Amino acid sequence: MRFRYEAIRRGRVAVCQMAVLLLTPFASTAPTGKAPAVPATLRSIQEVFRLDKNHARNGYPVRLQAVVTYSDMEWGLLFVQDETGAVYINVHGMAESFPVGARVRVTP
Image (cartoon, rainbow, N blue to C red; front, side, top):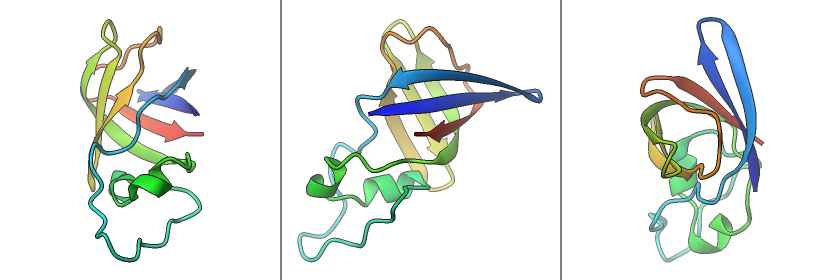
């Protein structure tokens, strides 16, 4: 799955393309009964976490804005947070760096 990340910095937008290997929670929070309806586009981290295992494998498009809470480009680590939660994104091999506190836009 490929996503475009835009770092929003002082009126300028730095755009780069990268492969995202993980934008799903480590464990599903959905109950074992009927899974909730999945929106056509995931617009918050909470919506990502609501996916059950079967839906998480489908690669739904994601469009959200978040703030970088931790970034280590050498190890390919990026953690972002929005008002609904936080998630890890594997950005290994990406040249762009995102400082803590940078606002980013995640789009397909």
